[in-house]
Image (cartoon, rainbow, N blue to C red; front, side):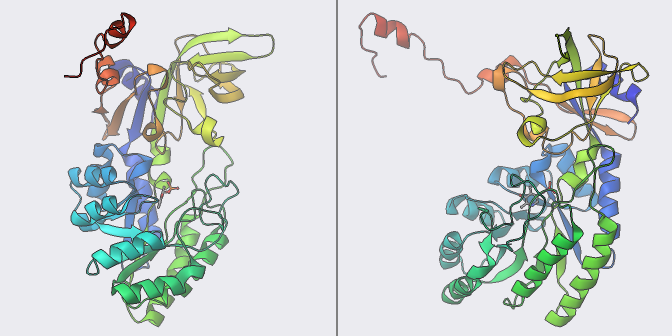
Length: 415
Ligand SMILES: *Cc1c(COP(=O)(O)O)cnc(C)c1O
């Protein structure tokens, strides 16, 4: 997006503000679709938790995407956005049987990731087929915070427990219509992914009623110059070949599913914040913005690096800054980073702010969550208003003179 357009959005809707470029989302969706054009039945289920604004979900629906959801609330957002229940898959972890039953009653596909719930669900609802989440025990990426397929992970049913799983199916007479893995965000290595896929194919041979195989996600996108990114085209070519071979062997044309979050929306997002203070200390120049980890926690939580551009002075002399927030706690966005000279009042633009940014925002320090704007066909569309003070107190109950009464020794009467 052009700096001038971003600046005009900040001017019109205030700051801090999130901006999403619909065109970038569309091209990423098409890139992935094209990479797997050799698969007869491809299904992309956008992972709602990356960015869950209903306008974004409607955009995904218009592109022909399905949804991957991890809570009943995400399921309901998807239905509100106009998705058909069968285009939504519910892939929770550690939720109650009741929540899964609620999703099943709404008609969405169910993905179960533990034997206890599988047995309970199968006993009560043998006629509702389910997908099962497998843990192939593969370490994808280097960071254990985002690697969820390894041996210690809480996610999925271990491949070593397949005999137990088959016994449950036999006893309950339930059907398994899909198998799934998600080895975690940030797959560095196509070979690791293909290796895990082979384990999934091997596992799939145990099930006779499969309709789809879901390979999860974890596609890496560049966050800064020189970053490794998943070569989707190469993965497409290699996995397509293996998938088609498998289908032939299995004797049925299955659907190949993915659940990309970051790949579709990360690069489409821009977060704009204003510099309140430029503070020179003995060792560092701090630029403090009107935000913090209450709005964008990835740098502090994951050590994620987001490019920061001074769009108010993009041609200015480069200097070193530590960009920090206004939260009363250490909330460093970037340490000693070269940025075009910053003056108080400048707007800084954080790149890759589409995935896991707004959706992880909080009200810490009693601050408002930012507004969200969709940039669509050269126009800015407000898709979420900035919060107001009313939002902070909405669910709080007034305790009246509860404490005044205690002080005088008078018992508070229950109504
Ligand atoms: C979070 C999640 C995804 C999306 O992962 P990305 O790295 O954002 O693509 C896909 N599947 C499941 C089950 C998830 O929990």
